[in-house]
Image (cartoon, rainbow over all chains, first blue to last red; front, side, top):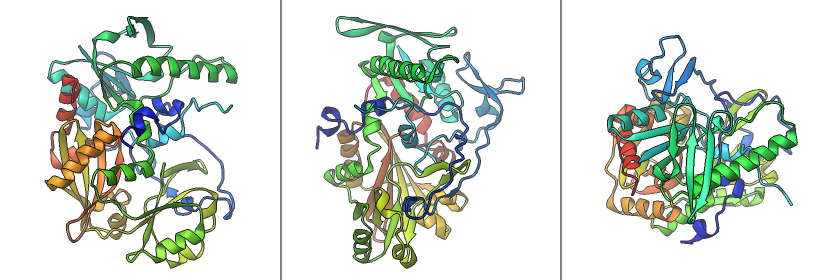
Length: 111
Length: 319
Protein backbone atom coordinates (compact mmCIF):
# COMPACT_ATOMS: atom_id res chain seq x y z
CA UNK A 1 0.00 0.00 0.00
CA UNK A 2 2.79 2.36 0.85
CA UNK A 3 4.06 2.46 -2.69
CA UNK A 4 0.73 2.26 -4.48
CA UNK A 5 0.54 5.80 -5.66
CA UNK A 6 4.03 6.57 -6.78
CA UNK A 7 4.77 3.17 -8.24
CA UNK A 8 1.35 2.36 -9.59
CA UNK A 9 -0.83 5.45 -9.86
CA UNK A 10 -4.55 4.97 -9.84
CA UNK A 11 -5.23 7.89 -12.12
CA UNK A 12 -4.87 7.42 -15.85
CA UNK A 13 -2.15 9.31 -17.60
CA UNK A 14 -4.49 12.01 -18.84
CA UNK A 15 -5.77 12.71 -15.36
CA UNK A 16 -2.35 13.07 -13.87
CA UNK A 17 -2.11 16.61 -15.10
CA UNK A 18 -5.73 17.59 -14.73
CA UNK A 19 -6.87 20.83 -16.25
CA UNK A 20 -10.07 22.66 -15.55
CA UNK A 21 -12.74 23.67 -17.97
CA UNK A 22 -11.85 27.05 -19.46
CA UNK A 23 -13.77 30.00 -18.16
CA UNK A 24 -15.93 30.21 -15.10
CA UNK A 25 -19.30 29.52 -16.61
CA UNK A 26 -20.66 25.98 -16.37
CA UNK A 27 -21.24 24.14 -19.63
CA UNK A 28 -24.67 24.57 -21.12
CA UNK A 29 -25.71 20.97 -21.53
CA UNK A 30 -29.38 20.66 -22.46
CA UNK A 31 -29.44 16.88 -22.01
CA UNK A 32 -32.50 15.74 -20.08
CA UNK A 33 -32.55 13.13 -17.32
CA UNK A 34 -33.23 9.67 -18.65
CA UNK A 35 -35.73 7.20 -17.29
CA UNK A 36 -35.87 5.85 -13.76
CA UNK A 37 -34.22 2.57 -14.70
CA UNK A 38 -31.23 4.16 -16.37
CA UNK A 39 -30.74 7.34 -14.34
CA UNK A 40 -28.16 6.66 -11.63
CA UNK A 41 -29.80 6.49 -8.22
CA UNK A 42 -27.19 8.92 -6.93
CA UNK A 43 -28.58 11.65 -9.17
CA UNK A 44 -32.15 11.22 -7.97
CA UNK A 45 -31.67 13.84 -5.29
CA UNK A 46 -29.58 16.31 -7.29
CA UNK A 47 -31.15 19.73 -7.48
CA UNK A 48 -30.23 22.99 -9.20
CA UNK A 49 -27.36 24.80 -7.55
CA UNK A 50 -27.24 28.58 -7.24
CA UNK A 51 -25.88 30.39 -10.24
CA UNK A 52 -22.42 31.79 -9.81
CA UNK A 53 -22.03 35.52 -10.09
CA UNK A 54 -18.69 36.54 -11.50
CA UNK A 55 -18.28 40.32 -11.70
CA UNK A 56 -16.55 41.86 -14.68
CA UNK A 57 -12.82 41.58 -14.30
CA UNK A 58 -9.57 41.43 -16.17
CA UNK A 59 -6.23 39.97 -15.27
CA UNK A 60 -3.43 42.36 -14.41
CA UNK A 61 -0.12 40.89 -15.49
CA UNK A 62 1.61 43.56 -13.45
CA UNK A 63 -0.16 42.73 -10.20
CA UNK A 64 -0.71 39.09 -11.14
CA UNK A 65 -4.25 39.14 -9.87
CA UNK A 66 -7.75 39.93 -11.02
CA UNK A 67 -8.70 43.58 -11.22
CA UNK A 68 -12.06 45.21 -11.66
CA UNK A 69 -13.33 45.56 -15.16
CA UNK A 70 -14.86 48.97 -14.60
CA UNK A 71 -11.87 51.00 -15.75
CA UNK A 72 -10.44 51.57 -12.28
CA UNK A 73 -8.58 48.28 -12.45
CA UNK A 74 -8.49 47.87 -8.69
CA UNK A 75 -7.63 44.45 -7.29
CA UNK A 76 -10.83 42.52 -6.86
CA UNK A 77 -9.73 41.39 -3.41
CA UNK A 78 -9.47 45.02 -2.33
CA UNK A 79 -12.91 45.91 -3.60
CA UNK A 80 -14.61 42.87 -2.10
CA UNK A 81 -12.18 41.50 0.43
CA UNK A 82 -14.37 38.67 1.67
CA UNK A 83 -12.64 35.43 0.86
CA UNK A 84 -15.70 33.53 -0.14
CA UNK A 85 -16.27 30.91 -2.78
CA UNK A 86 -16.48 33.25 -5.70
CA UNK A 87 -14.57 31.21 -8.22
CA UNK A 88 -16.22 27.89 -7.80
CA UNK A 89 -15.54 25.79 -10.79
CA UNK A 90 -15.24 22.60 -8.89
CA UNK A 91 -17.31 19.89 -7.45
CA UNK A 92 -17.17 17.77 -4.33
CA UNK A 93 -19.87 20.04 -3.06
CA UNK A 94 -18.46 23.37 -3.96
CA UNK A 95 -14.79 22.79 -4.07
CA UNK A 96 -11.96 20.59 -5.09
CA UNK A 97 -10.74 19.57 -8.46
CA UNK A 98 -12.56 16.31 -8.81
CA UNK A 99 -14.89 17.59 -11.47
CA UNK A 100 -11.89 18.69 -13.45
CA UNK A 101 -10.69 15.16 -13.57
CA UNK A 102 -14.06 14.06 -14.84
CA UNK A 103 -14.03 16.67 -17.54
CA UNK A 104 -10.50 16.24 -18.61
CA UNK A 105 -10.07 17.64 -22.07
CA UNK A 106 -7.52 15.02 -23.05
CA UNK A 107 -8.97 11.69 -22.09
CA UNK A 108 -6.96 8.55 -22.47
CA UNK A 109 -7.28 7.02 -25.85
CA UNK A 110 -8.81 3.60 -25.91
CA UNK A 111 -6.79 1.00 -27.77
CA UNK B 1 14.17 31.51 -7.16
CA UNK B 2 10.57 31.76 -8.23
CA UNK B 3 7.29 30.49 -6.91
CA UNK B 4 5.20 29.38 -9.88
CA UNK B 5 1.45 29.52 -9.45
CA UNK B 6 -0.71 27.74 -11.98
CA UNK B 7 -4.19 29.17 -11.49
CA UNK B 8 -7.05 30.61 -13.45
CA UNK B 9 -7.26 34.34 -14.00
CA UNK B 10 -10.16 34.82 -11.61
CA UNK B 11 -9.26 33.08 -8.40
CA UNK B 12 -9.53 35.12 -5.24
CA UNK B 13 -7.61 32.66 -3.13
CA UNK B 14 -4.75 32.76 -5.60
CA UNK B 15 -4.92 36.56 -5.56
CA UNK B 16 -4.45 36.56 -1.79
CA UNK B 17 -1.55 34.11 -1.95
CA UNK B 18 0.13 36.21 -4.65
CA UNK B 19 -0.17 39.26 -2.44
CA UNK B 20 1.20 37.38 0.57
CA UNK B 21 4.18 36.25 -1.47
CA UNK B 22 4.74 39.77 -2.72
CA UNK B 23 4.59 41.03 0.86
CA UNK B 24 7.34 38.51 1.68
CA UNK B 25 9.28 39.90 -1.27
CA UNK B 26 9.30 36.44 -2.83
CA UNK B 27 9.59 36.12 -6.59
CA UNK B 28 6.27 34.89 -7.91
CA UNK B 29 5.02 34.14 -11.39
CA UNK B 30 1.38 33.30 -11.94
CA UNK B 31 0.31 31.68 -15.18
CA UNK B 32 -2.83 29.98 -16.34
CA UNK B 33 -2.34 27.14 -18.74
CA UNK B 34 -5.21 28.42 -20.88
CA UNK B 35 -2.60 30.94 -21.98
CA UNK B 36 -0.73 28.15 -23.77
CA UNK B 37 0.03 28.26 -26.66
CA UNK B 38 -1.30 31.65 -27.69
CA UNK B 39 -0.01 33.78 -24.82
CA UNK B 40 2.46 31.45 -23.17
CA UNK B 41 5.46 29.75 -24.74
CA UNK B 42 7.41 26.80 -23.42
CA UNK B 43 11.00 26.01 -24.37
CA UNK B 44 12.45 23.00 -22.62
CA UNK B 45 15.68 21.25 -23.56
CA UNK B 46 16.93 18.11 -21.85
CA UNK B 47 20.46 18.67 -20.57
CA UNK B 48 22.22 16.24 -18.25
CA UNK B 49 18.93 14.63 -17.43
CA UNK B 50 17.16 17.83 -16.46
CA UNK B 51 14.79 20.10 -18.35
CA UNK B 52 16.31 23.50 -18.96
CA UNK B 53 14.44 26.34 -20.54
CA UNK B 54 11.75 28.91 -20.03
CA UNK B 55 8.09 29.62 -19.60
CA UNK B 56 7.54 32.91 -21.32
CA UNK B 57 4.77 35.45 -21.82
CA UNK B 58 4.90 38.98 -23.14
CA UNK B 59 4.99 40.13 -19.52
CA UNK B 60 7.16 37.62 -17.69
CA UNK B 61 9.89 35.03 -18.20
CA UNK B 62 10.52 32.14 -15.82
CA UNK B 63 13.59 29.96 -16.10
CA UNK B 64 12.67 26.37 -15.35
CA UNK B 65 15.77 25.83 -13.26
CA UNK B 66 14.89 28.86 -11.16
CA UNK B 67 11.54 27.51 -10.01
CA UNK B 68 11.49 26.85 -6.29
CA UNK B 69 7.94 25.55 -5.91
CA UNK B 70 4.73 25.16 -7.88
CA UNK B 71 1.20 25.68 -6.57
CA UNK B 72 -1.06 23.65 -8.82
CA UNK B 73 -4.29 25.51 -8.25
CA UNK B 74 -6.62 24.05 -10.86
CA UNK B 75 -5.34 25.80 -13.98
CA UNK B 76 -7.59 25.84 -17.02
CA UNK B 77 -6.94 23.76 -20.06
CA UNK B 78 -5.10 25.00 -23.12
CA UNK B 79 -6.84 27.47 -25.42
CA UNK B 80 -5.91 26.42 -28.91
CA UNK B 81 -6.13 28.63 -31.96
CA UNK B 82 -9.48 28.80 -33.72
CA UNK B 83 -9.86 27.04 -37.02
CA UNK B 84 -8.52 23.62 -36.07
CA UNK B 85 -10.52 20.57 -37.00
CA UNK B 86 -11.75 18.29 -34.25
CA UNK B 87 -9.02 15.70 -34.76
CA UNK B 88 -6.40 18.43 -34.96
CA UNK B 89 -7.69 19.96 -31.76
CA UNK B 90 -7.59 16.62 -29.97
CA UNK B 91 -4.08 15.98 -31.20
CA UNK B 92 -2.90 19.42 -30.20
CA UNK B 93 -4.46 19.07 -26.74
CA UNK B 94 -2.80 15.73 -26.13
CA UNK B 95 0.58 16.93 -27.33
CA UNK B 96 0.31 20.08 -25.22
CA UNK B 97 -0.72 18.16 -22.18
CA UNK B 98 1.99 15.57 -22.35
CA UNK B 99 4.54 18.20 -23.30
CA UNK B 100 3.73 20.92 -20.80
CA UNK B 101 2.50 18.52 -18.16
CA UNK B 102 5.42 16.19 -18.62
CA UNK B 103 8.07 18.86 -18.40
CA UNK B 104 6.54 20.60 -15.42
CA UNK B 105 5.70 17.39 -13.57
CA UNK B 106 9.30 16.28 -13.77
CA UNK B 107 10.76 19.44 -12.24
CA UNK B 108 12.45 18.58 -8.93
CA UNK B 109 10.64 21.24 -6.93
CA UNK B 110 8.07 21.40 -4.16
CA UNK B 111 4.65 20.78 -5.65
CA UNK B 112 1.49 21.78 -3.80
CA UNK B 113 0.25 19.26 -4.77
CA UNK B 114 1.98 17.20 -7.41
CA UNK B 115 -0.70 16.70 -10.08
CA UNK B 116 -0.32 12.93 -10.13
CA UNK B 117 -0.73 12.67 -6.37
CA UNK B 118 -3.77 14.94 -6.48
CA UNK B 119 -5.20 12.77 -9.22
CA UNK B 120 -4.77 9.62 -7.17
CA UNK B 121 -6.41 11.26 -4.19
CA UNK B 122 -9.62 11.61 -6.16
CA UNK B 123 -10.26 7.92 -5.55
CA UNK B 124 -12.15 8.04 -2.29
CA UNK B 125 -12.24 4.31 -1.68
CA UNK B 126 -8.45 4.41 -1.74
CA UNK B 127 -8.50 7.34 0.68
CA UNK B 128 -10.50 5.36 3.19
CA UNK B 129 -8.10 2.42 3.11
CA UNK B 130 -5.13 4.75 3.40
CA UNK B 131 -6.72 6.60 6.32
CA UNK B 132 -7.49 3.38 8.14
CA UNK B 133 -3.94 2.18 7.65
CA UNK B 134 -2.76 5.36 9.31
CA UNK B 135 -4.80 4.76 12.42
CA UNK B 136 -7.70 7.04 11.58
CA UNK B 137 -11.22 5.82 12.30
CA UNK B 138 -13.28 5.45 9.13
CA UNK B 139 -17.00 4.74 8.73
CA UNK B 140 -18.45 1.44 7.55
CA UNK B 141 -18.72 1.96 3.83
CA UNK B 142 -20.26 0.09 0.94
CA UNK B 143 -19.39 0.62 -2.71
CA UNK B 144 -21.78 -1.38 -4.83
CA UNK B 145 -24.21 -1.44 -7.70
CA UNK B 146 -26.37 -4.13 -6.09
CA UNK B 147 -29.62 -2.90 -4.50
CA UNK B 148 -29.98 -6.01 -2.36
CA UNK B 149 -26.52 -5.48 -0.93
CA UNK B 150 -27.34 -1.86 -0.18
CA UNK B 151 -30.49 -2.86 1.69
CA UNK B 152 -28.62 -5.48 3.68
CA UNK B 153 -25.89 -2.95 4.50
CA UNK B 154 -28.49 -0.42 5.60
CA UNK B 155 -30.26 -2.99 7.77
CA UNK B 156 -26.99 -3.62 9.55
CA UNK B 157 -26.37 0.04 10.28
CA UNK B 158 -27.83 0.95 13.63
CA UNK B 159 -28.07 4.67 12.95
CA UNK B 160 -29.04 4.43 9.31
CA UNK B 161 -27.04 5.17 6.19
CA UNK B 162 -26.18 8.04 3.90
CA UNK B 163 -25.62 8.21 0.18
CA UNK B 164 -22.49 10.08 -0.86
CA UNK B 165 -21.11 10.67 -4.30
CA UNK B 166 -17.83 8.98 -4.98
CA UNK B 167 -16.40 11.37 -7.53
CA UNK B 168 -18.35 14.48 -8.38
CA UNK B 169 -21.44 15.72 -6.62
CA UNK B 170 -22.38 17.96 -9.52
CA UNK B 171 -23.92 17.25 -12.87
CA UNK B 172 -24.71 19.58 -15.74
CA UNK B 173 -28.02 18.80 -17.42
CA UNK B 174 -31.20 20.64 -18.32
CA UNK B 175 -28.84 23.57 -18.95
CA UNK B 176 -28.40 23.70 -15.19
CA UNK B 177 -25.68 22.88 -12.73
CA UNK B 178 -27.14 20.45 -10.26
CA UNK B 179 -25.64 19.26 -7.02
CA UNK B 180 -26.30 16.21 -4.91
CA UNK B 181 -25.44 16.61 -1.26
CA UNK B 182 -25.00 13.80 1.20
CA UNK B 183 -28.44 12.32 1.87
CA UNK B 184 -29.70 10.11 4.64
CA UNK B 185 -31.54 7.24 2.98
CA UNK B 186 -34.93 6.60 4.47
CA UNK B 187 -37.20 3.59 4.15
CA UNK B 188 -38.85 5.00 1.03
CA UNK B 189 -35.50 5.56 -0.64
CA UNK B 190 -34.35 2.05 0.15
CA UNK B 191 -37.63 0.58 -1.07
CA UNK B 192 -37.06 2.02 -4.53
CA UNK B 193 -33.43 1.78 -5.53
CA UNK B 194 -34.10 2.11 -9.25
CA UNK B 195 -30.92 3.12 -11.00
CA UNK B 196 -28.72 1.82 -8.21
CA UNK B 197 -27.56 -0.97 -10.47
CA UNK B 198 -26.35 1.21 -13.36
CA UNK B 199 -23.17 2.38 -11.66
CA UNK B 200 -21.25 2.39 -8.38
CA UNK B 201 -22.82 4.03 -5.38
CA UNK B 202 -21.24 4.80 -2.04
CA UNK B 203 -23.37 4.09 0.99
CA UNK B 204 -21.96 4.84 4.42
CA UNK B 205 -23.21 4.33 7.90
CA UNK B 206 -24.51 7.50 9.47
CA UNK B 207 -21.92 8.65 11.95
CA UNK B 208 -23.56 10.40 14.90
CA UNK B 209 -22.07 13.85 15.08
CA UNK B 210 -21.68 16.64 17.56
CA UNK B 211 -19.90 18.76 15.01
CA UNK B 212 -17.63 18.38 12.02
CA UNK B 213 -14.07 19.49 11.53
CA UNK B 214 -12.03 20.49 8.55
CA UNK B 215 -8.33 19.91 9.00
CA UNK B 216 -6.31 21.95 6.54
CA UNK B 217 -2.76 20.71 6.10
CA UNK B 218 -0.14 22.89 4.47
CA UNK B 219 3.18 21.11 4.72
CA UNK B 220 3.94 20.93 8.43
CA UNK B 221 1.27 23.48 9.32
CA UNK B 222 -2.09 22.10 10.39
CA UNK B 223 -5.17 24.24 10.91
CA UNK B 224 -8.30 22.70 12.36
CA UNK B 225 -11.68 24.37 12.21
CA UNK B 226 -14.82 23.15 13.93
CA UNK B 227 -17.96 23.35 11.82
CA UNK B 228 -21.18 23.72 13.78
CA UNK B 229 -24.47 23.15 11.98
CA UNK B 230 -27.62 24.82 13.22
CA UNK B 231 -30.10 23.41 10.73
CA UNK B 232 -31.18 19.85 9.97
CA UNK B 233 -29.87 20.11 6.42
CA UNK B 234 -26.47 21.37 7.49
CA UNK B 235 -26.32 18.69 10.16
CA UNK B 236 -26.36 16.08 7.39
CA UNK B 237 -24.16 18.03 4.97
CA UNK B 238 -22.87 21.44 6.02
CA UNK B 239 -22.28 22.40 2.39
CA UNK B 240 -26.02 22.43 1.84
CA UNK B 241 -26.80 25.32 4.18
CA UNK B 242 -23.82 27.59 4.73
CA UNK B 243 -25.90 30.27 6.40
CA UNK B 244 -26.65 28.07 9.36
CA UNK B 245 -23.03 27.09 9.90
CA UNK B 246 -20.64 28.65 12.40
CA UNK B 247 -16.94 28.04 12.90
CA UNK B 248 -14.36 27.93 15.64
CA UNK B 249 -10.76 26.90 16.00
CA UNK B 250 -10.10 23.42 17.34
CA UNK B 251 -7.06 21.70 18.76
CA UNK B 252 -7.20 18.13 17.44
CA UNK B 253 -6.19 15.22 19.64
CA UNK B 254 -2.57 14.15 19.28
CA UNK B 255 -3.46 10.77 17.79
CA UNK B 256 -5.58 12.44 15.11
CA UNK B 257 -2.76 14.79 14.27
CA UNK B 258 -0.34 11.89 14.02
CA UNK B 259 -2.74 9.96 11.82
CA UNK B 260 -3.29 12.96 9.58
CA UNK B 261 0.43 13.46 9.06
CA UNK B 262 0.93 9.78 8.27
CA UNK B 263 -2.00 9.87 5.87
CA UNK B 264 -0.67 12.90 4.03
CA UNK B 265 2.72 11.26 3.68
CA UNK B 266 1.18 8.04 2.43
CA UNK B 267 -0.92 9.85 -0.15
CA UNK B 268 2.02 12.00 -1.18
CA UNK B 269 0.06 15.17 -0.50
CA UNK B 270 1.55 18.42 0.75
CA UNK B 271 -1.78 20.22 0.89
CA UNK B 272 -5.10 18.73 1.87
CA UNK B 273 -8.44 19.62 3.40
CA UNK B 274 -9.57 16.66 5.47
CA UNK B 275 -13.12 16.34 6.71
CA UNK B 276 -13.96 14.63 9.98
CA UNK B 277 -17.07 13.98 12.01
CA UNK B 278 -16.67 14.47 15.75
CA UNK B 279 -19.14 12.26 17.56
CA UNK B 280 -20.97 12.88 20.82
CA UNK B 281 -18.36 10.72 22.55
CA UNK B 282 -15.51 12.72 21.02
CA UNK B 283 -14.55 10.14 18.40
CA UNK B 284 -13.06 11.63 15.26
CA UNK B 285 -14.15 9.81 12.10
CA UNK B 286 -12.36 10.50 8.84
CA UNK B 287 -14.65 11.15 5.88
CA UNK B 288 -12.39 12.26 3.07
CA UNK B 289 -9.54 14.45 1.93
CA UNK B 290 -9.86 17.02 -0.79
CA UNK B 291 -6.43 17.73 -2.28
CA UNK B 292 -7.71 20.99 -3.73
CA UNK B 293 -10.09 21.95 -0.96
CA UNK B 294 -10.87 25.58 -0.38
CA UNK B 295 -9.68 27.36 2.72
CA UNK B 296 -10.32 31.05 2.12
CA UNK B 297 -13.73 31.09 3.72
CA UNK B 298 -12.36 29.37 6.80
CA UNK B 299 -9.70 32.03 7.18
CA UNK B 300 -12.38 34.66 6.77
CA UNK B 301 -14.36 33.21 9.66
CA UNK B 302 -11.53 32.21 11.99
CA UNK B 303 -8.66 34.52 11.04
CA UNK B 304 -6.30 31.57 11.00
CA UNK B 305 -3.27 32.60 8.89
CA UNK B 306 -3.75 29.97 6.21
CA UNK B 307 -2.90 32.19 3.26
CA UNK B 308 0.29 33.27 4.94
CA UNK B 309 1.18 29.68 5.78
CA UNK B 310 0.70 28.55 2.21
CA UNK B 311 2.71 31.47 0.91
CA UNK B 312 5.45 30.66 3.40
CA UNK B 313 5.47 27.04 2.35
CA UNK B 314 5.78 27.96 -1.31
CA UNK B 315 8.47 30.54 -0.62
CA UNK B 316 10.42 28.08 1.49
CA UNK B 317 10.18 25.43 -1.19
CA UNK B 318 10.54 22.42 1.08
CA UNK B 319 8.37 20.55 3.53
